[in-house]
Image (tube, rainbow, N blue to C red):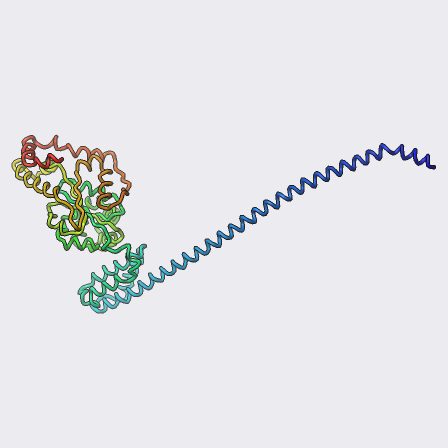
Length: 409
């Protein structure tokens, strides 16, 4: 029996060996699969951990942003509350003022408030309030007149610091008529960040009128001047935008005043025909005087018939005496006085404007100007154009009377 079992077992041995081999192979494959699966699981856990950390950081950032938004919302609400309080106080003061002088109604006051509400910049509102009160008839009767104005100016004074009119910069661009001041002014007028009034010497001629302009009080004659001088308005971006569809028929003093109040720098351009040195010295404003070759000036006068050939010598003597006086003038304790040569402006307009900004505004910033090639050529040719137009006899007369001025050109 034992022998039979042994023979059977030995006969089955190859099959058993194969079975053991198969089991080993299967076990090896299962072990490899388990190892690979463990690796994938470990990587998934690491990736999940990274994602969880990123989510945690994002939640922290979101929480921080929500806090900042909440703080901003609180500040906005505070400002809005101040604005509403300001309007309520103004409504009360204006009603009281109009009641004192016996004009207007509550509806008129609400209209005034709506007009102020249209302004995006809340900081100019108190100044607008003062303008409205100042335009009331017999305003000195209204709650003390100036006392009311002072009270309105005191409202929200901390936030009004940026629009403090005493801190505004005022520049006068000055030259002889046809002397090039209008060209420098035209360059300045391309900067929409400035409040620019071209050719204003035609209507503003006294220190009091200058002071009114400095405080953004625009008279009716200033408005009338720009209504009828569209070419001058076009030289100022700050004015031209007040004339929709190319017409200034609807232009009002209020429009110009509001535009003035939004700018920290105002520039007034005019001629020595109306602004003498005595007037200029009495003003606390920076001065940019443009000096030009008298032969070029007289050539333009003769071209439009303002000066005849017989009048050239006398006219040249008077002209050059003024040019010498203004060119030799210097800065005072209350203003900066700078002389700019027209020939330099015509040759390098951008550089000249940069120099003006540096010396009078104490800044290196120069606005981007879109000067066409034709305009640059026109400026450049205007320097020597007189040589082809002015008769030789007139050239000799001017040379005789203006030796000092011409030597400095």
